[in-house]
Length: 214
Image 1 (cartoon, rainbow, N blue to C red):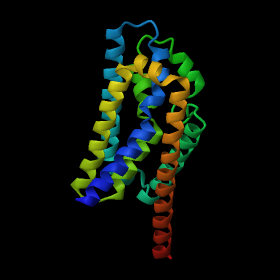
Image 2: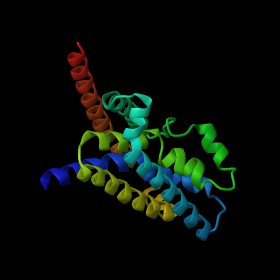
Image 3: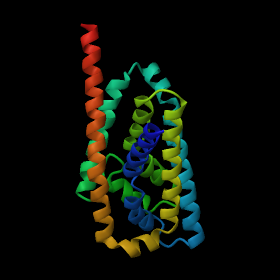
Image 4: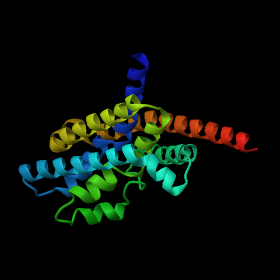
């Protein structure tokens, strides 16, 4: 039971920190500027649902993609860890990671009529880092329990994301710009440690595979 709780906490921390719904709040407010309260809530709901669907898809069927593309789990752990590390370093500097969206894409999005799917759901919420995270987390363990733990982490994260985006104006007003930046830095530090762990595990497995091949 303790192992399940520990795995659940690691999964929830990794998914929540890389999705970073608090960091998306200021962007969400800018993109929905001028919308009514009902429209903002609808945008938050659809963005959260689409991001949830994408992350669940890759969590459940990521191993199939590995087999089709001929990519080893160890290699993907390293690649996913590198993507997470880049994202985490940007979070430590309290700036939007360009692995999720570029400044030009974010600026262009403010002029679109519907931003729920692109770029809010993809790539802001379910970006490469988040997709890599859920796939690596599922690949780290075996059995249905591990998979359900990751799915549960995604569910909790997306519920929290919807609630934060729904109350985006209030969250930004309470935290302020400096509060959001501070929160991003704290999450970035924790995410850096998780990314390093992913890379270390992947390198260890790759070295083991190389040894066996030799």
